[in-house]
Image 1 (cartoon, one colour):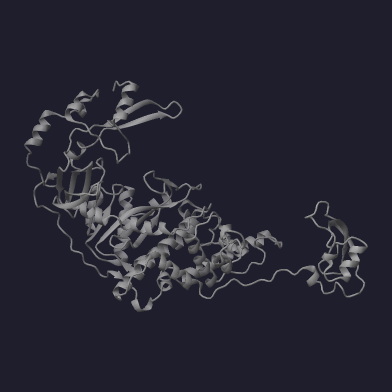
Image 2 (cartoon, rainbow, N blue to C red; image 1 turned 180 degrees about the vertical axis):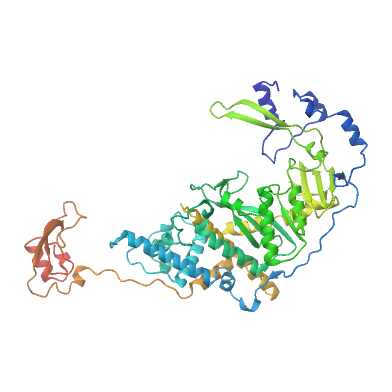
Length: 609
């Protein structure tokens, strides 16, 4: 590869190279142009003429190998969908209000666990910090109750509807940010007491802090809610598997980064959802190696194991054979398709061209991929490596299809080459309408597999959109706080979807997501109001013994402001004394002489300074 840096820059500007990992880039090289490029091919990369003749005159292919099926009606064998139960599985009559649907997942047993652990952790903090002063945040702590925890969840939900800079702005009792709702539910001190003592699981024994317990702080909630999701709803035939991201930038070893996601930094959650409704029926947070070790089939890659793990849980709890799972290129592979067929499950998804056991012809569709190594100071290319070369091109609208046993691979060129793998669809095509930038439409011939994939893959994305609409996204150093509030959001979304499903069965009008949340907040709060605490009375009103006319003993201590004549708001108005009245309950500091007499004889002593 003897190219000068100037030539490389020219090729980059012309779009002749695409960066590695950029799935949206496309190489557009004509046959004549590619021959003029200054690429030096190795002998192994050259296309032999005999191989080209074999492509023009294909030979009979043995059983179990890939063969072309273009312009044929061949399709994989279909496994009939045999559901044991589909849809909402709880008694419809038992769920009438929004609160009833939410408590299907956050039931009384789960709330009792959270209340017990929160109270335990708060009492541990108080014991370690004893004695507690009047100005301590933990002063006046009382144990949290289940009803108070529900109100706490309602306040968290309302915070997501009313965005403010910090939590303090919600609890501000005066000024521009004052809102009567938040101050009526909690005082600032009480809200922070619950928020900072919030706990979900007991601590581990000192000698059991192994790597396998990395997610123990939230694992009991994950297991409980994940199981409840499948108990209350069984998806239809089409489901999708994708990853969600819980935004978090703290210091944890299992934090992930994906530049192609809206939330780039965070904790990855592998999720399976119903394609028709977006209802999440299962999820597995990724905690690193402990999560990998807990999955089935250790001999397979992680991307295959996580899909099999989710599908086995779904089949175990919901039954039914013949489901059709849609995955993206992160998961899809021929090996995964074969494994899913063994458990009577179809799959369709986009696939990377470098996956093992794909047809050899697919590798000819690879684009030229170049690794560029830049110096960000000089902004120059140091060196580069060519990873592959495109040796076969498809024209726009052209389709290639290959079949092996019950697996079909389809390559279709639109704006770029789309590569799909399916055990459900063949190479059949259908007409689809496409809208142009100017508002006009055009008719496009697309593979049926592409149309079905586009329509059914968005189940997890739909659930993510619901969660992101009213999301409690406050910064926290505790990663498990983020995971819990994500589970809370998903539970609210699933409850909303079930609520509307029941509304449709009753021939009633479905309600909006916002309206459902408003109803849920009101029902969780009920008649709850924060207890009103009387302010500490002033010394002129509270010291009933101040003007009794009896002898009051004086004491001497550290100099403080005089209760009668000191005024810090006036220049030079601050007066201090070391003499105080030891008989009065508040032990006021008084200047000897007039201040002592005024304080013990007049009811409004401050006005007589």
